[in-house]
Amino acid sequence: LVLYEIYVRNHGPNGTFADVSQDLPRIREMGVDYIWFMPIHPIGKLNKKGELGCPYSVQNYYEVNPEYGTKREFELLVQYAHALGLKVMIDVVYNHTAHDAVTVATHPEWYHRDENGRPITTVPEWSDIIDLVYADQELWDYLIDALKMWVKLGVDGFRCDVASVVPLAFWQRARQEIAAIKPDVLWLAESVHTGFVIDAFDLSYDYDIWPFWEQAVDDAAAVSAYLTALWYQQGIYPAHTIKMRCVENHDQPRIMQRAPGRAQALAWTAFQAFNEGAFLIYAG
Image 1 (cartoon, rainbow, N blue to C red):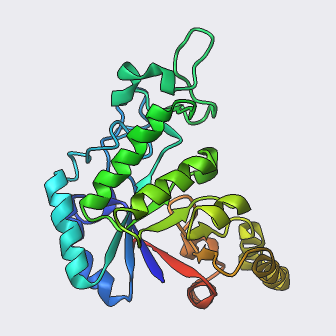
Image 2: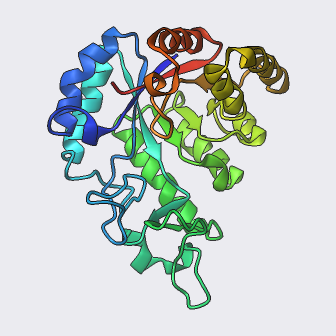
C-alpha cells in the first residue's frame, strides 16, 4: 500500500484543489494507492501562527478552506481520483480546534478551560489551538457526523492526528458507525499506543522505533540496532496490524536533508518502500 501526502497550499502554483486535480495522473503513475490530504478545513484566524495560519488549527470540520476551492470542487476531485484508481484520505484533527472555531461560541463546555472558564490549550507551544474534552456525548455525535458527511462525499479513509489524545472508545464508535455507511474505510493513526493500533485502526506510524532509524541514517554502525527494533516491532504487534513506513513527512526533515548524501537518501527510501508495511511519500 502506497500513500501520498498532499498539502494543498503548496501543491501547484495556486495551491488549490484544481492544481491537485491536474497532478493526479502523475501521482497515480508512481504507483500510489491513496492520496492523503493534510487538513482541508478553514483555518483559524484568532491567535494564528504566521501570516497564513496552520491548517491543524481548524475552524469548521464541515467545510473546506475557501483558499483551496469549494466543497463541490473537492467532491469532483475525489470523483476524478476514483476514476483514475486512486482513493482519498483526509486529515482528522479531533483533539483540538482553532480559538475561533464555530463550536467555541455554541458549545464552550466542549473545551478544556482555565479557572476563569476560558478555553485553553494544554500544550503551551500550540498557542493557536484550544483542546477538546470528550465528556459530552453530544460532542461525539457532532464529530462522527462530520466523518459521515465526508464519507458520503466520497472520502475513503482518515488519517487521525495525535490519535491517542482522543479516547479509544470514540474511535471504536466512529469506526463502527462509518463502517455501516462504507465498510472499507481506511483508518491511519498518528500514534504508537498499542491499544489504539490493535483495536481501532488499520495503520499506524512507526514512531515507536523512529529514533533507531534516525540513528541508522546518521551512523552506519547503528543499522543493526534498527534492524533489531524492526524484529521487535514484528513480535509485539498482532498480524492484522500494519505499520506505515516513511523517510519524511510534514513533521520531519526531508530525507535529502537528513541523509549524508544522495546515494544514502535513495538507499533508505528504497529500504522503507520495500519494508514490511505501507509506505508514505511526502509530496514532491
